[in-house]
Image (tube, rainbow, N blue to C red; front, top):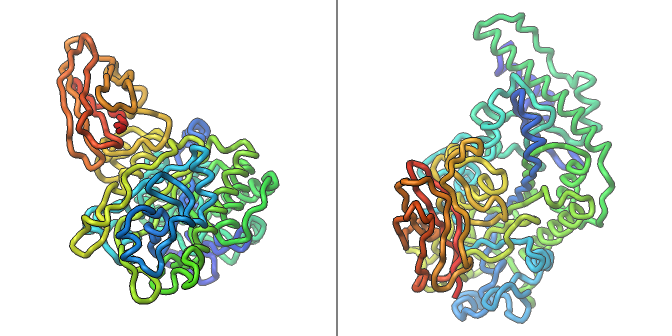
Length: 528
């Protein structure tokens, strides 16, 4: 039996190799697995979890983070704009949608970062294409076949499915396996409805046609059979592991909202508290919910309606999840990020809604997050040739921040995952590590940053470094679009340089040290 026949046969029984249909609390769950002999030790040493929340359909960023003092916002949205008095304060010029009290509370606790104007150059306004671009971390003219999360997991689990780790590397709670979780060898895993049902399924054979032994034959046919045996074996391995985690889970310490996202986050909490050492969780709304072309708000109260309900579901669900993680003692190991394929148009349409646009805010939450607003209020004057918002941050800059600062990957690994080097334009979203060296940790040289003082700076910033004597070193300061705004050579004996930041706009800048073929990065905040 060949691989195609094997996959077809299990699909016909409702038990697909990559999408075995099962549910946790009535939700389909996907597991992505892969590994090598040292993987379990690596997972235990890097005990950090990322929860990705997809907002499918294109979230309206202007009604999510409201530019409360911009008259153009109100003039271009006469029927759907959120009144300033109804918003929840974020800054003097920005307000949360009134349904996002959960996000507002996390922000006030310093656990929520708001990244403004996130998109990519020449954004695509198609749902399918836009989603694929975000999941594969590619440009609009590149059609990727693997996802950025899948590529990251492949760097730490290169031998799947020959060698399986004890725990799945990623778990998806949704209706179909995400392109974002595909590695170079395809979807490396299994799926299930709920731990008990899936456990019974795989232990009774589950109507999966038995895969014959490869008999050690080093032939194309023998290797095909070995691959299928390993995939089938992974189903049994992870059914038992996930069931064990579910059985060991501590009861939730909070009352989760009885919503789609609330229930899915509750499942994530149960698996984490039950000891599952999964690296990434991906959850999504059930449908294309955020595609609010019509009836986005109520006509009598713009702070209510379809979009308001979606945001309330998100904010309350995340708030409950983080409180549960805190109560259970896991909040230091968990961070989360939202994403959507695009924002909406600046101007409302004629159906009390908004059409497909470009840039929108993105949210990152967790104890280790530098809670602040990254970027400026939306510029409603300078728009693109279609009248849509211009980019402030490339979404891959945020992905780079996650890889470099949260997961602690090397710059070379991040470049491999994101298909380009975004380390110099990553954003200091996480509190540690504060800088990323070019080499892996065991290869760090003496050339590195020591401190920046003051930081934030308003006039002169003094940068101190550890430098090898006689090294040829210089430093550049770049904005978040990669434009160099300051540069200076460095006296390697003093290891110190003063940068005049007067005349630079307030915001975050990347400081790059190049010394003897080595590169290091850190971040400078400029205040006004």
